[in-house]
Image 1 (cartoon, rainbow, N blue to C red):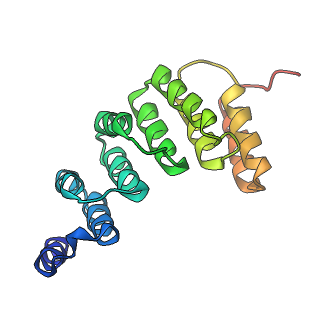
Image 2: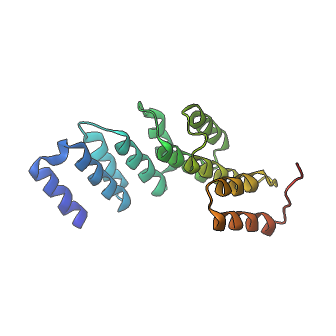
Image 3: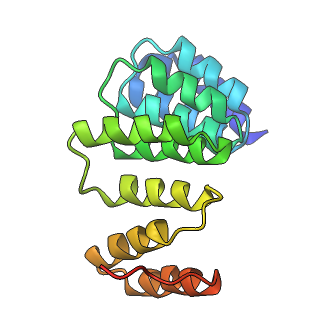
Length: 171
């Protein structure tokens, strides 16, 4: 209810023409699981920036509307950042859309995000969802965490590897 009051105050003051304020209203609705109202705000924005696209795509993904997240991602005219790529990869993982996930990951690589932890972690977690008995995804995730100095996450990734009865292939 407070979200509607805040949005009403923004409209009353005419502040919806400010991209920063509109982004905050959009993000608020998405986080309150009012993704359809968030989309209305998005569609009515005079100007959209990377934050606008990120809030809407991640909002769809977090609210379980994964196809909508991917559809909106495909409509982007701006170059996605690592957070948008991570949301798109998360949507692919939820849908078990491996081929589309691979395409998005390849696009992130061509965008110069190959060394980015958020994108790499999203892709590795997506690969863990695929019902193939291989250690590659677990090892990739462990290595990503190690390269970022996230040692407790390394330990957890290795426990998942061992807990699944898998062993790292030599080499």
